[in-house]
Length: 71
Image (cartoon, rainbow, N blue to C red; front, side):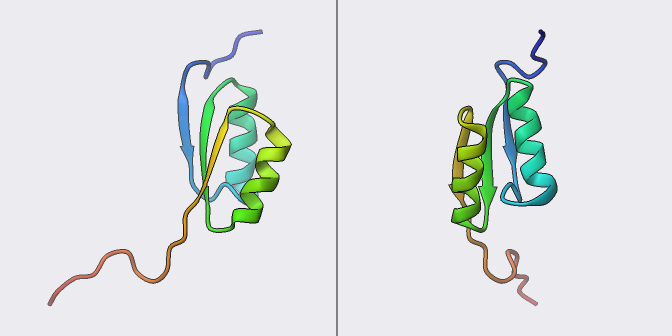
């Protein structure tokens, strides 16, 4: 079976839940090495347990606006 993403890396934000989580699972099944970002560390731990391999999980916390403009 061909793995269309073999040797490729993917960065998935919002990987803890919903569409982001499903995207991580699909990419891993297709052979990609995935970097998963989420705001919740517990979600990443459970995701890593589900896919077992090819996932580097990191927890990213973002508070408030990311861009400030001086007026």
